[in-house]
Image 1 (cartoon, rainbow over the protein chains, first blue to last red):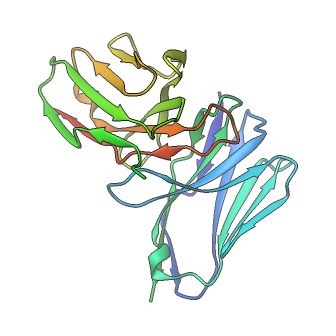
Image 2 (image 1 turned 45 degrees about the vertical axis):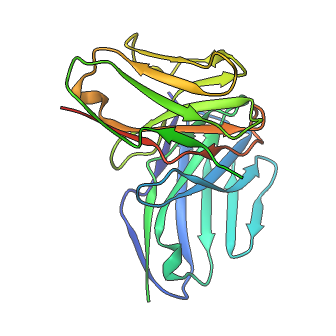
Image 3 (image 1 turned 180 degrees about the horizontal axis):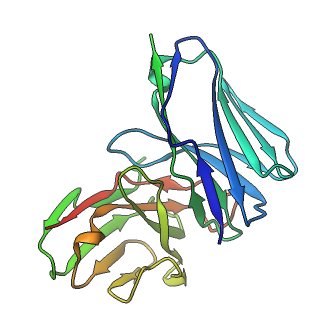
Length: 111
Length: 115
């Protein structure tokens, strides 16, 4: 069955550094992959979508890469801020829009 | 404009009871998705609607779970004979239309606790 894995351990970094989160998947060849941010007690919020033929996508301080050979996506936040502290979810996207989420990685940015 | 709203925000019930969870999607969004999220996990797909019809209900765990969207707007997720294992946050999301490139907008969720 399809499986998507994110590092379940929390990532703690210092303000100003670059945070890098990893998403690996198996038994699937998604055409699209999305990243979401989730704050405690709230629903996920869409951040970025990347297509299989795109190697990299950027939005402000965010950058996502998608390597279909390695079956891996990396999510980077540059110049991180305490306000970036949250759980970040990656999701494989089916043709119908159905999302298959990883378990999320919690990021803590310390001032 | 208003986002996706879900009611109630919290629901406590006893094992064996029936519950209904409501989702009001963003006006004009034709696609509506239900997910379930357990503590420390990512959301898990349950069912999605395109208009009034359930286009994919493959994620419903068993026949105690049922969802409707009779007029293509508001949706209700119904759980019969609740079990303790049903305790989770139930999330609803909507998008303008179905498709992999569409952004899904999530509601805040309903936190269900079955005692």
